[in-house]
Length: 391
Image (tube, rainbow, N blue to C red; front, side, top):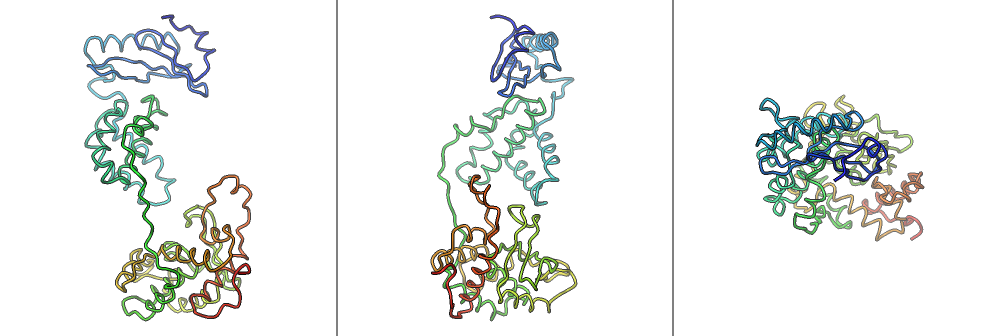
């Protein structure tokens, strides 16, 4: 086997794997990045370990390091250990570094604790104290296999988190591959995606539901008005519960949700029907000085996210608040000739087709205003003088 030369290294184009001696080889990425890797049999286990990057570590230095590591492994030692401590972070330490790095960009403060809790429950017992460089596909299989069939969504998230941590380790030079990547995808049994739809009422039962909610003594006035406003605007629960008066322009019958409160992280304008404005006028009487349109039971706090689900359940409805968006969508599809793009814009859905999204620069606001007014009229039981878009 011919040894590497400086010229061969400098002219190498990726992807490539160029071997040298003592298990040393140069990995060249498709984009041309060059990393020194050493394959050794360490205490009976074959491992590939990153030892540096070219050109910051030249050929002579890489050979010297590789030779010392090879001698240690040949003598039964572990060249990855220094003074009895792992060379590089443990998987747990790497996970904490990833959580700290991504924390400022996560939209929900719950994300960090959720990552940590899932890893503590499923991953750390098996691999938490291992050097992140030693985590193998076999380790990942041992973590995921017991929960893959019974807790598929949890297992999927744990796999994604292990993968993210190991990819961080690759970027930091602690390892050369992602052990939770394509190898694991191929090894784990395929399970059909279980699609579970949100419980939703048929659209012709929504008006009756609202009437029953209004008559109920189980909920506060703020809660009742919030639920009606949610149905009228086809908005998400959190968007309504945390709505503030400074987002409303009553004169223009407009509710503008800032990007940071939207799932797609994009500002969304909602046209307000005449009935929606009446709901806001009633809600104004409940102001507690917090700025919230629908204040909760506790001062300066929004309604609980479980308030409406609990109320609907107690009233005997097999539905959740998010399901009213489906009711609205079904009504628009079956009872109007509304174009698909208008219905999707009303629900603040992101266009998945990139080419189509590139040309979709309008939010179709005036067409949505017509649609939402018709929806309000339908819910009120009033005769509709027109169907949107001519049907």
